[in-house]
Length: 77
Image (cartoon, rainbow, N blue to C red; front, top):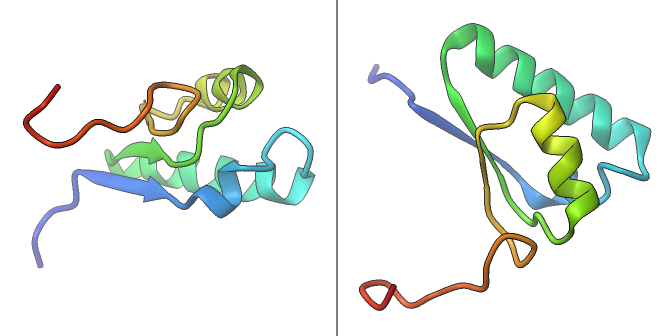
């Protein structure tokens, strides 16, 4: 079995992390387990500053979504 470097957290959990305590708890648990295992985390669907602030506080390593930047075609960045 190969090593895992990154774990992407599905946007369905991230999208409502600020308003939904269950989503917040799930993302918190995923982040803690990933940290213990030495795996970096990526959050999908980071759509606004409130979400970005919450995932930053949790220690998530990377973010994707319109709250960060609009998508770019590969090779055109």
